[in-house]
Image 1 (tube, rainbow, N blue to C red):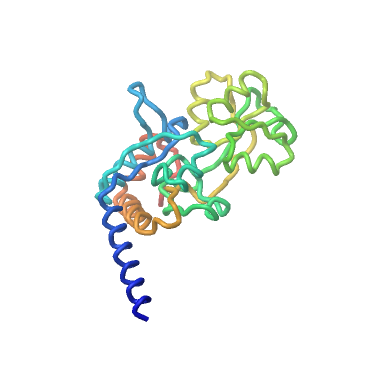
Image 2: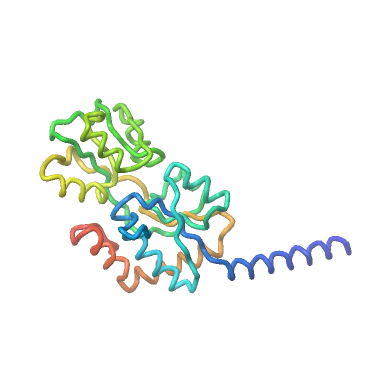
Length: 245
């Protein structure tokens, strides 16, 4: 019994030390840096975009010291779970499959549509070759749709595949595709109907980081309550973008 009490006391002390250390350390915010306007690297090589603005404000409200690090998309979850950073804030949709591996905060972007873009309005999106970024909900959707999935490591490569004829269309978040279509001068057009996928976009965290999750959840809710998130959505995605009601 004494050994049990001693072990329990040591465990509590260790947990208390870990708690204190977690408050003292810098929270590393992991992002891709290649998915505008959600996140991208600006001319100075710094992380920029909607998620940089949201993330910095979340850290301020949660009274956390944060720094930004970039990681390629296809290994972004494994490098979170292995401890290379503390959060994922990278345009990641909340899905049941991902929640088997990591936790999510409440969403900081409401569920938005995915869409197809192609060089022609009559592109074959049901049976043709469709480009999508690997390990995304869009890639999973295409794989089950009957079309031929052509996966790429980055979003830019998916759009390039359509332009160079490798793919009949690209399937991605419509918010990400809008600038590419608008700036293409009519080269790219949307095809077919929008497709609603996922439960919105949230921050990914390790399942053990329950206190950190609670801090960010509270900060996200405060930004929803005072309209800060909706203002940022309109700033980065336009007045027609879907906002929180």
